Length: 451
Length: 32
Image (cartoon, rainbow over all chains, first blue to last red; front, side, top):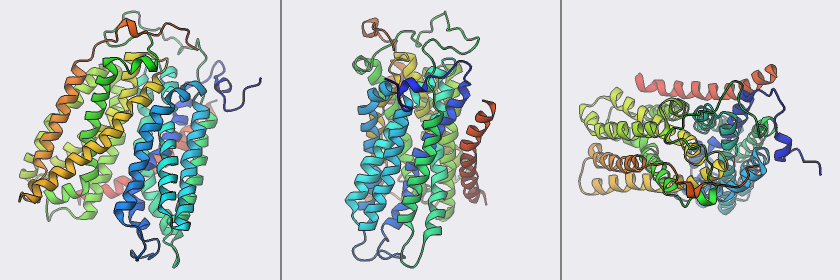
């Protein structure tokens, strides 16, 4: 039977194919799904669908609208874990196409939900369908990139995952521009923006679908020879996904990712009020928005910088830097607040957020080092459940502890000190997980033939 | 192949650059 355009067989690259055509294909997908990080730009407008300029009776409140993003993130983690093996089997083109259908379709279903003013349709559209698009899209190019760049796996996956960080930088101003453009006396422009974004993102993800290729089974970069001297934490064996998650190494890496993300994500969610409260009277909401933008930029740049660096210094050492430097920086934040130094405070958070992004981008290469290339995409999918847990743990810790302190009479400016020390505790747990990392035992190695 | 390489990198580079510039513009307020 002739393979269809979407089948893995149709994506095998011909001899002489330039491997640098693959990262932009991955970036096209990640730049699109990275929009999720900027979903908060729709929160307030979604509460004014009936009142247009203000919330009218019958309009949804912020709490209800806030669930859209949370559902999407939960479905991101679950779909990455559930569909990881399917993504490995069908290849990157079919999985990217499915992700584009889900993500673009999620916007369209949500637009229909806005039209009917039915919130459950938005939960279903952007939350469930869009969330599945996020999860499948996130893992779809990972193992392909690792196979194309056996000499630089960190740089290759870092480039793609950088796109997820960069997607928010594009989506935030784009959403505001589109809503402004479509605004009329009868509509605040959200419905039309959702339809437009659904179509734009679907088409943009098609760039990835059309241009992605997998290397032939025996392909190697010209002049590259696999290292003959084995490194302690870089395996030449393979571990199947069903076996990988039974190894202690998988759960240690799960802990590494979960702790690194928990510490960073808690800060991202509270960045704007935090800088305004610590430097009360000196930082306006507009300036705080600039701070949020700047740390988002470092979140993106950190992904390519740290993942590429890990190709030279090793994955374990890279995470050692994240955890040790993170502890130093988090513990210095209360002092920087007392000193009243905004530039030092901003610099500390820029480095912290670069390491948060770096943690996401370096993990696929770390997985390849520990479990080989065979089912690394599927293993990565399962590991992303750590993100879902961290997405709840980090913000809950920051928000609840801050509120508890304020309720007990601690001034707002000082309410973050304990939180920062708790973040140091999380990073210490991550450090210990990373420190305990050892090569996977031979009994877990895959002995079958690799397609 | 070279032309395709340039087109693809431009297609992903331009939106990203636009987003970065918009973010930097906003971030400049921090230093004013």
